[in-house]
Amino acid sequence: MPIPTQRDPAGTRRRLAAWLARRLPDARDVTVGDLEVPATTGFSNETVLFDAAWRQAGRTVTARLVARIQPRRHAVFPDLDVTRQYRVMAALSGTGVPVPRLRWLEDDPGTLGAPFFVMDRIEGRIPSDNPPYSQEGFLVEATPAQRARLWWSGLDALAAVHRLDWRARGLDRLLLDADTVPGVDAELARWRAYLDWASPTTPVPAAEAAWDWLSAHRPPDPAEGPALCWGDARISNQVFDDFRCVGVLDWEMATIADPLMDLGWWVFCDRHFTEALGVTRLEGMPSYEDTVGRWAAATGRRTDPEVVRFYEVFAGFRFAAIMARLAHLLADWELLPMEAGFATDNPVTRLLGAVLDGPEVRRSPGA
Image (cartoon, helix red, strand yellow):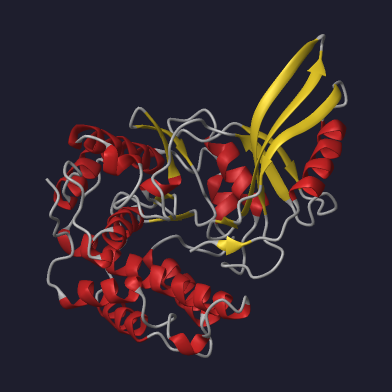
C-alpha cells in the first residue's frame, strides 16, 4: 500500500542541485537532470529517483541516485529513522549482502523538509507490489527456470543476512536498546505495542486471535542465538539482474532476533501475493517446504516445524497490524473511510485467518 506524496519535482530538483554543490566542494557545474517523484511511494519512506552530473578533476561525472526521505507526517512506523537505516546499510557494506552504495546522509531537514540519505541506484528489476508480481510483470513473462533462479537467489541473499556477525559490525549498538535482550519476548512486546499504537480505537479480530495463539505457543529462543533480521524480507524488496539478486533494499524494520522471523515473513508475503488474491503460484516458484530446507542448509540453523509455524503466524500478525495503520492513514487522506472496514477485513487479515484455521502453513502449489 503506497503513501501519497505532494512533492514538487521542479523545486526538488533545484534544492537537490544546490545541496549537491555543497556536498561536492571540489566539483563545478552541478546539475540534477531527470528526476522522478512517484505519485506514490512505499510503506514508510518517501523516495526520489534522480540523475546528477558534475565536472570534477577535468572530467564529467554522472550518477543515477536515489534519495530516501523520512516521512514528515503520517508515518507507518512511530520510530522510523532514516539515519538508522543509513547506518545499518553502511554496516553491511563489503559483506556478502548486496546493498546499494551509500553516498551521503543529511540529517538537517532544511533541504527537503526532513532528514534523508542518498545512495546509488542499482540497475535491475524488482518484482512489483502493485500490480502484484504474481499477476503482471517480468516474472509472469519469465520461464519456470528463471523464476526458480530468482527465488533461490533472493533466498540465498536472505541467508547471507542471517550469517553475518552482527556484533562485529556494531549492529547491536544500532538496533538494540541498552536494556533489550534480543529474542522472541522482545519482538512480541514490540509488535503488540505497535498494534496498540497503529489501531488504538479499532480492534482487529484476526490480529487479536493471532495474538492469543502466539501467546500460547511461544517457542524457545534459538540455541544458535539471535541474528540480524532484515525485517521486510521479500522478493519485492530485492533488485534482480538476469534473475539473480543484486540488491537488498528497505531496512527500516531491521532488528536482532530469531532469523526464522524473516523466513516466516518471506513465506507469508508470497502467500499474500498468491493465495490471498486467489492466484495460483507461478510455475517454477519453489515450494515453501523446499524453501525452508534450503534456508536451513544455507544458515546451519534448525527449523523445527512448530517454530516455523509460529513465525509464519507472527508474520501475519505483524502484517495485519501494519494494514490497520494503513487503514487509518487512508482515512486521514480521505481516500477510504474507516467505516469501509479495511482495517479489519483485507487480504492480509483473511489470509491470517486461514493460517490460524489450518494445521499446516507451508502448503504450496509451487513445484
